[in-house]
Image (cartoon, rainbow, N blue to C red; front, side, top):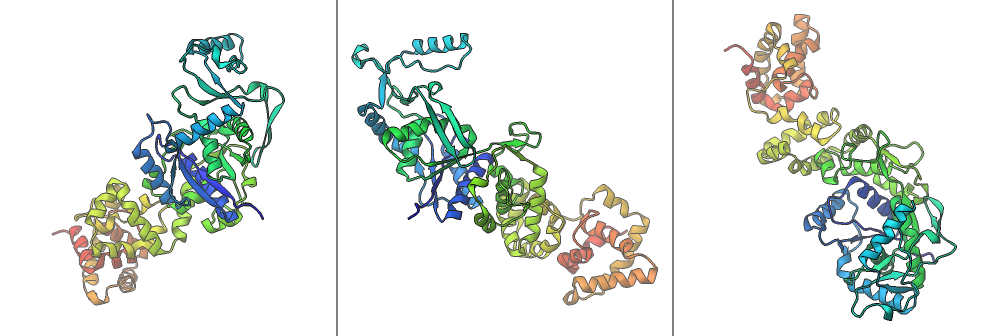
Length: 476
């Protein structure tokens, strides 16, 4: 019987859930879902000085928004320190680890010597075979793993392929510090083993760690998990991802108006592909995802591609789903919060009614928010420069002619079709092209030169608001 796949996402809560971490979580989640397994969540909070409750909350909130939920409750690494220490002492009793009494001065000397000789600094193993009794009474010590000193450690990686490390360059690393606290290297292995993790999917900056961690598994007689070290994300210019490229927290992308489904779609394409498919649903990603199909090379983050993809997602979303996402987005920007505070049932209904036209012109929820500004703007409307230019003598003349005709339409009959009939009839009578009549109308009703279809705008605003806005632009 095949084993159940268990993956894990294990962020350090020293900051927000950044975009690289979100993609790592996504790949773990997709592989677990694809194989019918499960993804677990572990908060690696052993760095007590830098770990914060705020960061933990931000990470959990970001994962929830993306829909990358783990199975069961999150495990907190710091709470398991006693278990980590227990394994270190077991390795000590098995002769697979040893007490090292090297002082800070000795370690510094080793570093300086290595630097002079032009080689990487590494511990020289001076306490590996010495009797601990030789150390001064009560001297502090760390516990180090006895790494093999000859041969090679091979990491068979599902993404990187066969990666070979010479054992003579992998020094005896620390498992337990002199204050009795475990190192990251030990804690990760113990937690992954105890959680039943079968596949470790993480950034390829951990590849060397896999060589070292493999030796802890072997020393304890535990099964080594399958490794999959995924490439890092670079900016569009090929440089290491920084804030200017998009190395922001997931919460920032939320505030920029991206849909969670679109962001997942885009992140999945960073380093993995299914043919030439750019747009796909989460369900398709689950069906298609194979961890062995992840590329070795670094992926490039491109805001323009993300924005275009998000626009596709918005247009493909049914209006009720998109409207719910829009309302959920509002608290995440200053303008959105102002609108949320002003929302009543009437304004909600107007925005919902305008949504089909608004979403055709928007690539993000920020643009959608901007697009619906004309609906709730206070009168008299602020005017864009180009819109104001349309309300010259001729433009105002068009408004003056249309206002009484539109006023003749009864409130009960007010609709896009009814107002279009009025404007078309006026255009035909005066020999104007429909656009020449519609553009001054758009400027007066929205303060802009672009908007959803003008007759949809009239329907959304309603008879009373439309006539009031026209009156604002006509001579008293």
